[in-house]
Image (cartoon, rainbow, N blue to C red; front, side):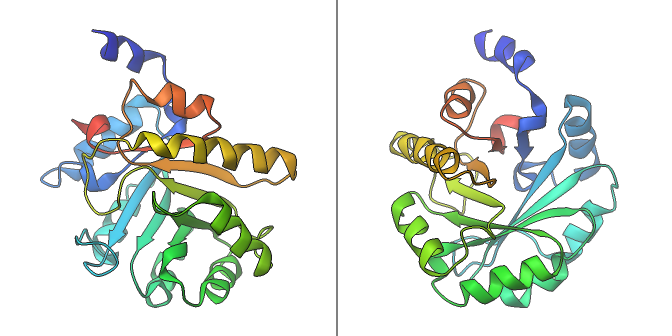
Length: 218
């Protein structure tokens, strides 16, 4: 009962359901459910089977999802060569395109490519990557003021339904404190193992948006 009661209190505009965890036999039904709950932003997990050990879906299915014509979307590119796919997500319904810091190549060019498309640019880090490492890179690359969203992974990316890694929580607080101290405007998004029990603590530590998969749709 506690989990069900708490779910009534949450501000669903802060929840970004991962469509990867939806029922692909009836995607429209899943989108209707998200709309009913008051969701504003849908998360698109794009996996290539190389950067992460799984494959999700590609531009064709995304195009069909975007045609629902109600939500805004953010595209999380968990792929080794995002430069090949960024143009495919330059859509008026896409609010953010997020790439991973760990690809370690062409990040400056990729962020600039996203910004030139007039879509907001995000950068994501895996659980084992420290916030300090990311910030040092952004400073050295003169990207700090170009980043619109920092996505902190709270599970190893690739599979839905994993348990939240508690050691990630201080990283969320660091991202929030650094933003406030330096008067920055990036959104803090957290992805992985989020449910209607731990979401409150994650928000209290400074997260703005929570990606929720299995616990939202199931």
